[in-house]
Length: 443
Image 1 (cartoon, helix red, strand yellow):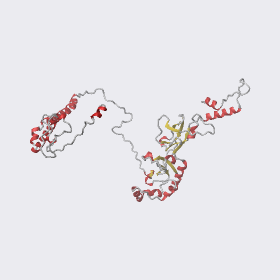
Image 2 (spheres, helix red, strand yellow):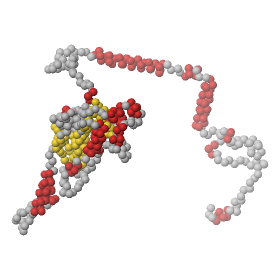
Image 3 (cartoon, helix red, strand yellow):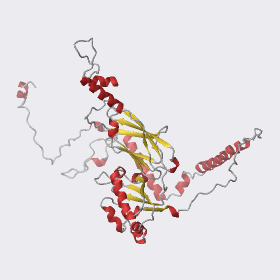
Image 4 (cartoon, helix red, strand yellow):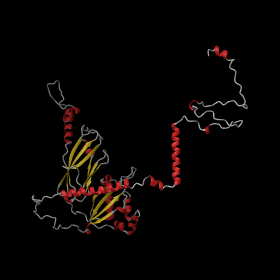
């Protein structure tokens, strides 16, 4: 990679002079080479050490500008690059971070933030966090280590702790030093303690909150826990009044006198405030009393001996199969008796059926049979109902025009009737005069 930079900025061993026999470096090339070497060696960052206190909020920002110079091609002096960079953080030797440490980065174009509240169990033990940066444009990676040396606090934990829910903030906005300082200043004006620390910050999504709609000024909300060395002020105690508790149960905002000191920048949900007094909490630790089920110190497990009596499972096997088989056989016989031996029969059904219903059913069957027989033989005589009975002019009875053995398949659609004496004759056209014309036309 170093050779690549030499050829990009100019060969430091550029040939100068009158011939190739002398090897000399020009002043401009020398300055460029030194600048390049300085830039390259400056990218080799050492591990960073931080010293947070147990029980106090820890915030570490992963700045994109700090890692931009790690990805080739390295930016030249004065050059600005805006590559998308994401981070992956984990405890060295483990796939994830410690339980007390959280990480957030909204977009690849914003800085990442590590935050959390160190616990007293990790005091004096260095916690090494591996930070891997990914350049989403060039797919290059860079890795650094963050060594967290947790120090013991003077007063840990602080005896009085209050947790506020801020509705108009996201967690990354609240982690900014300016915003967090403004909030602690407002709390200090209300509480008036001698010592005030931010203990922890938690996103509302980590507490089961819902993702807000993509509408302007809609925030996720954040829980901020602070601790002090003096008792809660009267303003903070107003939330515990019965009137405010009733308003909170009716989903109404309680009346808090000091809310105006926060309203200019922070919208606090006073119904979700939590006040914890560590001085009044009773210790729930109980000493373990050894009894049955707990081995004494130095006890060893003794497995059972090999001389165990053999057991015959033949009876258990028979019982397991015989009983369900017998029950299934009995149910099968009962079902077979009901289905086969308890049939009533057609005669008993007819005896229980009214006569009028049987006659109606029989007539339907006969009519159906007659229609089916007629459909099989289509050469029978036409029904008399389809023939004219009376003459339309004289009113005389007209006998049938065909006998019973008449072939109806050759009958024309329109039949010609014989001329009756009282029927008017229609003169027929003479076709003899047209015959010469037909002959001439060749027909």
